[in-house]
Amino acid sequence: MLGSLFRRLTAENAAGPALFDAITARTRQPHWYVEGGLPDTLDGRFAVLSTITALVLLRLEQFDEAGNSASVALTERFIEVMEAEHRELGLGDPTLGKTVRKLVGSLARRTALWRETVGQADWCEATRSSLYRDNPSAEAIRHSENALRTLWAGLRGADLKALEEGKLQ
Image (cartoon, rainbow, N blue to C red):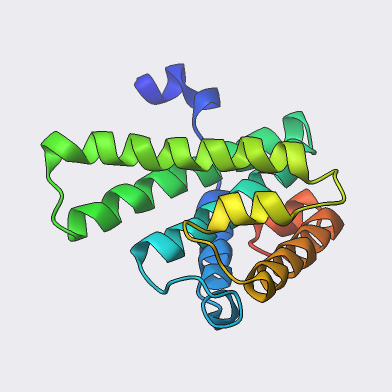
């Protein structure tokens, strides 16, 4: 019964898992951690994952109403995976919800940051803020900025169906 009441509020297609899997594959590319100088740790990988997810969410926003379903599906999948991963790390119910809310908030902050940045010429500060905790080398930031620009160009060239199928270009 609840499914029929809230049908439009939850994603019904497989766009979330396919798209999230594609984002995860991008996150695992070694260049982020080698040339980009990001730590190959949970925090470093989360920074890349949430940054790429934020850019994908921005692209889905550009499809207006048509992109809403895919955006909801991707966000729901992000939450599911964050919860499952942290359960595997040993977090229990008393702290799990708070931790997942913090991670979703981090994704929301990155999405807002990139919403303001993608139309600008300078992505250096957004790249630093979105990916790094420390002060990385100029070469590392340049590499990551170029990788994010390349990703964004591919996303801008992708139609909604391709993105829903996990094709990030």
